[in-house]
Every structure is written in C-alpha cells, then in structure tokens.
Image (tube, rainbow, N blue to C red; front, side):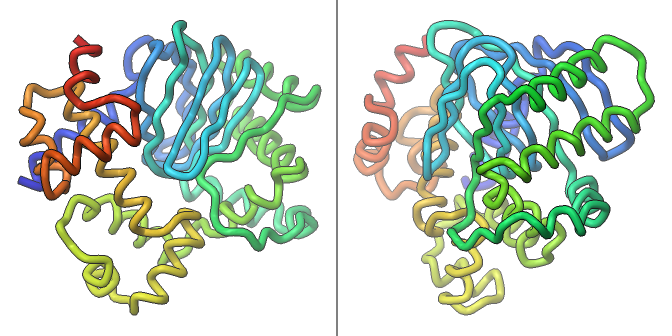
Length: 291
C-alpha cells in the first residue's frame, strides 16, 4: 500500500505550476531555470531542489512544519528542498521561480569563498524558509531577471544575475541563516538524508528504525536531522504524512479510511484528529469544499 500512496503523492506534488508557465529560460542542462508562473488561489508547492521564489503580483502565504511566511509583491524567499503549502487567499498570484541545482550552489560557494567568509556564522538549527524584504538593489536585480525572460540572452548573463542575487541575500540580515544552508551543499550526509527521508517517510517504522536503516545511531541521526531540517524527525514525518494525505484527499477518489492507511496513520480517527489540527476542518469537509 505504501508504494501506491507514495507514487500518487509524488505525481501530484510535482505537477504544480506546469500550467500557465510563461517565459521559461533554461540555463544549461541540469543547471538553473527562470520560470514566471501564475499560481491559482490555493495550491501546493513541491520543490525537489533549493530555489528562490520572487512574488511579482498578489499575496502569498507559505507554510512548512516549522513556520509561516507571508509575502507581499516584490518580496523574495529562499526555500530548501522539501514540500510546502501555499495559500494565496482569494486571488491568483504570479511569481518568478529560480530552482538552484547543487552544482550551481557549490560553484557559487567556491567562486566567492573569500567574500562569503565575511558573513557571520549561524549557530541556530537549520531553516527551510528564508524571506527577504525588497531593497533597491534587489529590485533592480529582479527587474533584470524579468527582462531576460522576454529576450534572447547568453545563459551566462542569467547566471551572473542570480549570483548577484545570492550575494545580496548573503549580506542581508538573513544572510547568516542562508549561508548555513548553502554551506551544507555537497555534504554527502545531508544529500543522503534528504533522499532517504523522502523515500521512506511513509514507512511504518519507529524512529530507531529510521536511524538504523540510515546507518547511524539514534542520537547522531537526530542531531544531523535537526541541523538540516530545523525540526525533530517526528515533527517532519508527521507533516509530510498529513500533506501526502491532503494531496490524496483533494486529487484522488480514494476513501478517507484508505487515505489514512496509505498515508501512514494508524486509524481513521487519528487521521481525522491530525487533519483537523493541521487544517482546521475534517477531511470530509475539506473534500466537499474542493468539490
């Protein structure tokens, strides 16, 4: 049963934004893309890699298992690899999306290492979402990126613009938090943990089973997990399961009890309690509202 739920969730979580996509600029194979998207009034974001989201029009509320960010036009956000709920209220919004590959970020860190070492160290737990207020320099950089979507351009030109954007981020008040994320790029343990958790979060394992299957002691596993995700493994797993169930609820015809079982919940009643706590209504009410 796990396999079918995982496949359905993965499919629905990744089709987001493929419609109404305008002005796509691909910068080299497996490098970076600039995409201007029109997002419906309520939708999910699933990013399989780190990325920058720039709100062009409308309002955007982004939520993960740790925090909620409310963005206004012109504001920007860096999001780590993972899944997030996006609610835009009563109106659609438009944004510029820049997915960033591990290779691009590693190259950025290496090229500007002497400059970036001036950024203060961040000693807090890892973060998944980082918001940046617009400044004149950021606004000018964003304007340049938008113009690139309208004209033919050398790929290197867009790469330079995005590096400029990341440097401005690094030396903003949120820079230390961002650099703590970027410095983890290329870490074998971090990449392996992300892939491992995304593949196995629906498994009916105890936390000790996760750590054993990953090949670490429980304490070391918890420490690594906290440094990457900024929350406990249990909180992250619960959030991912409830999001998986929500996707199945809105995008499949499965019964609610089957959705509960497929998404790793021990019973329908426990699923209903968890769903109400997370979304403020019962699963059946949510499905009726979707219809």
